[in-house]
Amino acid sequence: MLRTAARGTTLHTQVNGITIAYSDQGTGLPIVFLHAFPLNRSMWAQQEDALSLQFRVITVDLRGHGESDAPLWCYTLEQSADDVNALLDQLSIQQAIFAGLSMGGYILFAFYRKYAARVKGLVLADTRAQADTAEGKDGRFQMAQTAYKKGPSAIADIMIPKLLSPSTIQTRQDLVQQVRAMIEGNQISGIAGDLMAMAERPDSIPLLSQITCPTQIIVGEVDQATPPSDAKLMADQIHNARLAVIPNAAHLANLEQPEAFNHIVANFVSELSKPSR
Ligand code: MLT
Image (cartoon, rainbow, N blue to C red; front, side):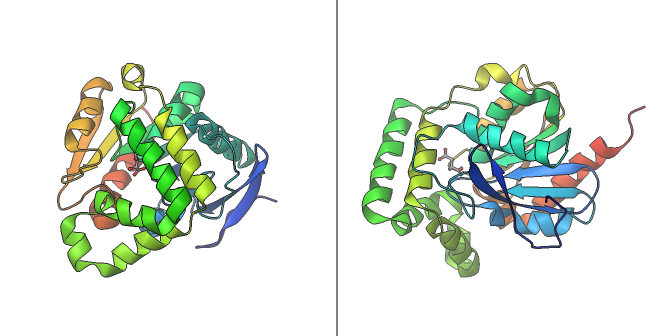
């Protein structure tokens, strides 16, 4: 039986033939958070704690990650979008705000293509609309081979310098270890599956001008994986989109600067919560 969880409770449900883990806290306008690669929904803990005081916050372990199943087969980002859609059906949520960081944002583009009527607003954080280049696809292939041969800790070694700023890596071992634990908690099938899914994702630039819902774009000032120029490109092409650049943050801006991130999201969602005149 689906229900609203007490703080911190993990819930499980069956969607599209697999078990998905999620949490559901607070009341009010729902915000659905989709995590980055190769992490899990615990990356949103500080958003969950702060924002569930005002809103209903749902975080999802996408297929292949965290406590959700990581089946050994082909993955697509559309499939992850279908999983999220099926979860919302089960929770009887007609419309929500969706916040995706990096891969979470790629999945939101797939979600918007199929389920735009469900989207009341979008938060696109540290993500990009472009598809992978040929070189980028080759890098995905190489990383999948590394995951297969050396395991998730080798992926953590490669990814941590791309996810966190040099100053965080030098001075915040707690955060570095938290990110490492998330990465090492994944199964190889999930890591390789998502690498294939991201390599095959379509170019979402043509979609940008068709996005009609309110959109907040967020980027860490020193994000090198999806830099501010990618965020600006989205802001320029999505009608009336807003852009916020968070100082002293790299790719995982929500973890490095949670207060600034939460403030931006809370303002955006509060405006959408007001009854329209
Ligand atoms: C992520 O944070 O989800 C990844 O950096 C996305 C990517 O590899 O393109």
